Each structure stands twice: as C-alpha cells, then as structure tokens.
Length: 396
Image (tube, rainbow, N blue to C red; front, side, top):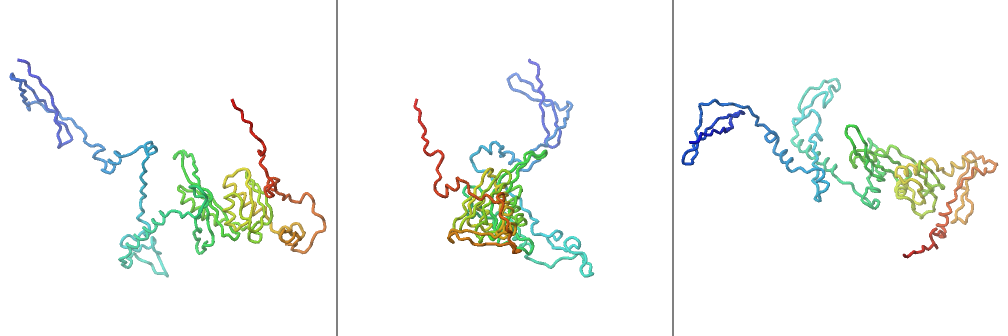
C-alpha cells in the first residue's frame, strides 16, 4: 500500500485580519476514492495580513473616473467631442460675511461697533422669508452674466475677435462712459516659461476706446482667459485718453509722416467723401476718433501694437493745428482749395498780431509731396514693373 500523501491547504478567516493555516491529510483508498481526514490535534500557525486596498478606500465616483479616464494623447487624436469642464459654483455670492442663514449682526465684522455714541450688540435681523430666494436669484443672475457670450457686431473677416465691439467701458463711481465704444484690435496667446509651473499660458488683448468726437485711447490687458483680458484692457483704456484735433471734424490738418520703432506710417489729408482708405487697424481707430476721410499707408512692421503706437504718436505729437503753425512760424497760414478756384484763403494768423518779415528758410520748408508711386496711382498712370516683360518658355 502506497504511503499516505499529506497536502497543506490554507484557509482564510473572514472575521479577523489573520490567516489560519491548517494541515490536512489526504489518504488514497484502494478503490480509487480519496479520503480526507483533518488533523485538528496539530498546531495552528497564524500569519497577519492586510485586507485594505484602494478599492475599499476610494469612492465609487473616483473608481469609475479611473476606469473611464482618457489619456492626453487619446483626447488629441479622438474625433468625438470633448466633454465640457464643469465650473464650480460659488455659493457665497451675494452673502455677507457673518450673517449666516439666520442673518445675525456682528459688530466689528458686518456692522459698525458704535454709531452716534451707542455701542451695538449681537442681534438678529428682522425675519425676511424671501431672503434665501433673493440670494439664489442673485447668484443665478451673476453666473448667467458670466456665461454670456460676446455679442459680435460686424468685425473683421475671419474667426478672430478683431474689429468686434465690446460696448461701453464699465462706470467708475458716478462717471459713466455711455458715449464711448470699445473695439478689439488683437487677441493672442502668450507664453512664459517659469521654474515652478513650466510653460505658463496667458491671453493678451489690445483694445481701443473712443467717443467719435476726438477723444480716444488704447490699452493692453493680460489674463488667464480672453474675457477677463478684454475687460481689463477696455477699462484701462478709458484712463489713458488722448484728444486729437480734426480739421472740419472729418480729416487731419496736414500730411503726416511718422515713425515708431520699425513701423512707418504716411498719412494724407483728403477731401470730404473720400473715406478711410488705410489699414484695417487704422480704420477702426480712425472711426472711434471721428476721422472720416484719410489716406494712410503702413511701411515696415505690421505689428498691431506698433501700428497703434505709431498712429497715435503721429496724431498727437506730429500734428499741429493751423493756429499752432501760425504762432510757431509768426506768419499767416494760407490754404488753396480746388473747389474755391485755387484762390488763397487765410485760415490762421499769429495770436499776438505780429507777422515777421524775414522769408522762410529753405531748410524749414516741410517736404509734403507724395511718393511718385502714389502720385501715378492717383493720376491713373501707374504701371506694374512686370508689364511688357514676357517670359520665354523653354521646352525640353
């Protein structure tokens, strides 16, 4: 008869954090059946174990989030729509610190300590059954205003915000700016490399503000999102306004050639009805200033911020009125207009009444002539330099 074989089996206790190991003997019978006899008289060994894992520590929502999570590569390569981020609602909007649900008055926290020599005590406000409902309505109205999209009003072509209207700036105290209008010139993403955050992204917005009566300004706003950046730039531009003189409320006083960094702008005075024939940034700024007729051409860098800086520099520092020119030169300012049969018209005289008799030095005479190319374009004589040149085809 074959010797009995002994096999050790482990039984796990479900009632305590221990493992009980018992030895069980297995005896084969003659008929082929297996007989199991438990030897309870043998010593029992106890081994400590731990039955706590992340499965019974995390909540069900966290477990499902881990199972259904997508990697960044899958999100970039997927064709389906991405889920929108859920914004956390701030339940403290509209509430006063210290009041609570029962609306208590705490002197020094949400109320003055003393009024007219009388010291206030901690007390409860009058019962208002509609107080909680008013707080909920105020909170919903705030979030509805925050989620409201910008109303686009005939901006530039394309999907960008350039040229769109932002309405009037926010009031400052009792001063309201209902007669001003703000327009977007540029919205772009900028990045800054930091030691802790790495490549940090922010939005930069360039906005111009004007009342179409000569007062205008521009500013740059930066924030984490485009909406906040536009709001900051709009409210900042109202605090930096320039007053620009206009000739007969429709054009500039004289031709201007101004340079700012790598940008150069040539502005030409035009008659009424000509319109604004210039860069779209200059058109937007000119309309908010109140200019109706002007020809301008941008040379060099077309950076929107440099173009705006150069444009406002030319209108505020390089431009002078007829009266300022007469006082500086000590001469009469005479204008020749084609609709007046080119007869001289005195438009300004020195304020003190003294006219100098010395002639004007040749070095002080400004060069206000248009470029030869612009003159030919006006006369319809401009031709392309490639006109009349035929390309000879070579066949192999």
